[in-house]
Image (cartoon, rainbow over all chains, first blue to last red; front, side, top):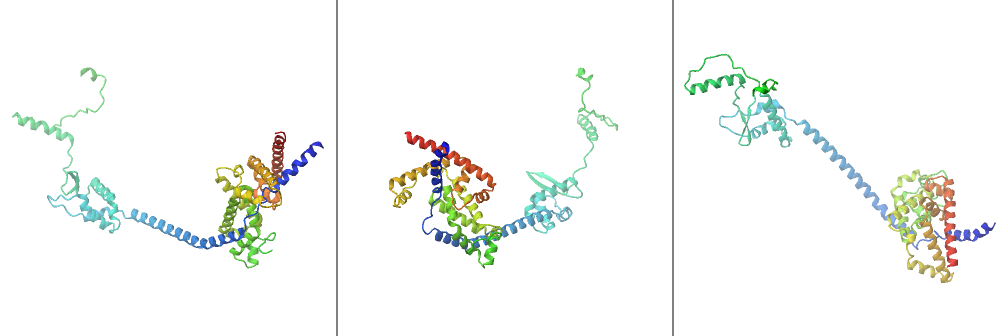
Length: 202
Length: 196
């Protein structure tokens, strides 16, 4: 009972303080100001939404255009056969760079579109052609430039024959009659690992 | 009362029934609930200017969310919730809690000019209000928030529960705990004042 009587004035004080805690009134003309602001902003809302719509539509169109462009770029890879056919025959002594010669061919094969963006593709086409070598001009690298050459490279000779011919030349130079032999010289495989018995002989 | 949502009828349905446009609906909401919105904002921000700005922001949010008016069953609690979150956001954006700031001279002068009480008494009341503000500011957020809303006389504990999205029993428990803490601190302060 004592506690209750002690707390009663404290409760009353707290109640009165809490009652007046939020008992505040806005300044005069508050509603008018609110209405004016809302009306003014309401007028701006419509153009803003239109702008947002226009912006999103533009973004969609841009995205679609980029996607179409990417698809076209992938599609316009030049046809190798067409490029090969349209490369002009190289005259003797004519040393035009290969890329210069091939670019119009690539452009023609790609329908003229985006050909400039395909320098890498041109290089790749040249390298592919050089790799297969099916009647395609050979690539020659001279003075830091890549050239086309219609001359065929000599067929690669077997290593055995090269090494067999070498002693005959040296013997002629020395004036010694060459030893006529048709038997190929045996070539030792020096890359094979040494056996344990050979270690001591050296 | 024009613009008031009947129970079970959304704000927009009511507006359609009375052939009102969105602007008129918001006008109606301003006319009906602007004081409530202001008091909620004031209970949190403790400053007239900030509370008015928050109320303005609240109604602008309502304007932006015109389409959602169709799903609002009760405009009062919905607006109160928008006002509450707006004011909380504003308070979070401030570095110092306003309860720790000194009252502005114009506010004190406006109270002194009232004339119903003596200047000394008004000053003492103002001091007590400041003490209470500081005590409330010192409460934990889970206790402070329902207490601040409970000081707005238009709001019942059920409405506070709906605004805060918690059960009504939790609101009551928190209010009791907050009041008990405030009483203890207030008693200690008064004791010190008496003996000091």
